[in-house]
Each structure stands twice: as C-alpha cells, then as structure tokens.
Length: 223
Ligand code: HEM
Ligand code: HEM
Image (cartoon, rainbow, N blue to C red; front, side, top):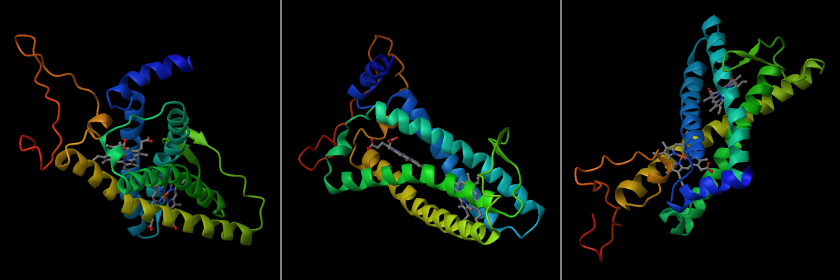
C-alpha cells in the first residue's frame, strides 16, 4: 500500500510536482491559516462581550481542524518526499526557505495546541467543536489550582502570540519568494504546487504548453 502510494507520488515528483494530496494539504491549510490570522486579529479588536466570545468560538472551530490536518500532513510528508525543483539549487536562499517550512510545521501544531491550552485554562471554558460540528474535549486542567491555570494561560498566550507574529512575518516572505521564483527567475517551483491543469489540445494534436526558459543574462531568448 505504502509502496504503491510512493510510486504514484514519485511520478509527480519526477515532473517536479507535489502530489495532488500534498497540493490539497498545502492550499487547504494555507486558506485556513490566513483566515485564522485575519480573524484572530479582528477578534482581538472587538470589545469584551457576547460578540467577542462568539468570534473566539469561530476561531477555535476553524483552528482545531488545522491540528488534525497537521498530523495527516506531517505523516504524508514523512512518507512522501517533495519534488526536487529549481529553487532547491539556491544555496542560502534554499536553506532559509526550508527553515521557514519547518517553522510553518511548528506553527501548525503550536498554535492550535497553545490555543486549546488557553481555552481549557479559563475558569469556565465554553464548549469546543471541531469545525463547529464535532464536540472536542477540553484539556484536563479543571482540577488544577487556579493560580497554576492562570500561569498556563499566560505561558500558552505568550507562545500563541510569538507564533502568530512569526507567521505574520514569514507568510509574506514565503509567498513573495514563490512569486519571485515564478515570475522573475522563471523557476518551476510554484507550478509544482499548483494543480496540474492539462493544456487545451490544438486542432492538429499539438499542445499550447511551452516549457519555461530560465531567465538569464547569457540567454537573450529568455524573459
Ligand atoms: C493556526 C491556527 C491559529 C492561528 C493562526 C491563530 C491566530 C490567532 C491570532 C492572530 C490571535 C490574536 C492575537 C492578538 O490579538 O494579539 C489569536 C488569539 C487567540 N487564539 Fe488563536 N490562532 C490559531 C488557533 C487557535 C485555536 C485552535 C484556539 C482555541 C482552541 C485559539 C485560541 C485563541 C485565543 C483564546 C486567543 C486570545 C488570546 C488572548 O486574548 O491572549 N487559537 N489567535
Ligand atoms: C499561510 C499560508 C501558507 C503556508 C502556511 C504555507 C506552507 C507551506 C509549507 C509548509 C510548504 C512546504 C511543503 C511541505 O512540506 O508540505 C510550502 C511550500 C510551498 N508553498 Fe506555501 N504556504 C502558504 C502560502 C503560500 C502561498 C500564498 C504561495 C504562493 C504564492 C505558496 C507557495 C508555495 C510553494 C511554491 C511551495 C513549494 C516550495 C518548494 O518546494 O521549495 N505558499 N508552503
């Protein structure tokens, strides 16, 4: 089974592409994380009251699936290596890009876990639901002394804030680098993370698709 999955994904990796499963994980989680960042900051601005509590219910309902998806994605990523692409040949830039990917994985776990801890440490935590539908338990903090629960809330709050700010800085860097590789360097890296949409065949059986020529000063045809 695992061998068959690896073989199937290797066919995509050989073309410099992530597998459809890797692509689905990437874009679904990117959408959820971006929503969480925007919604989290918006919620922080609301005055104390019922609207703020309801907004945090939405925040937790959307954030908890990120934890579940993170477990699946990490498992998938450990079984199925990503493709080797043009952007893997850029020395220090490649190292930074890979460090940012590790940081993202840290956030995929650290943000929901610290949010869950904060929520469970409140004196009277409200109910949690995965995706707003499936009941999700509180962490078992209710028997701890109140002072310890406040300490947990403080530490978890600090972890949450640090990871939020790390994401707010690195996501634009990551997306900007992907766009620069695509539009400026003409590398294949973004294409490898987009769904493979077959070209419309030309009437005589040809294809509109042209391989992307790398941009280089010594190649006047490129660009
Ligand atoms: C990737 C997932 C998540 C992201 C990106 C995220 C992002 C944020 C952001 C941007 C804020 C506002 C920070 C501020 O105002 O300084 C926030 C606050 C908060 N988040 Fe999350 N969050 C995530 C997951 C979760 C989850 C799953 C829960 C609960 C189960 C949660 C609970 C909270 C709470 C309770 C606060 C208020 C913190 C405070 O007032 O000190 N978060 N989050
Ligand atoms: C919150 C938003 C985002 C997050 C958390 C995120 C996360 C990640 C992670 C963890 C990887 C490594 C692949 C893996 O190991 O699973 C990755 C790769 C990639 N992402 Fe994102 N991403 C986000 C947004 C974007 C956006 C907006 C773009 C395009 C403009 C983009 C383009 C790419 C590309 C091209 C790769 C492949 C890089 C390579 O193979 O070297 N990502 N992303």
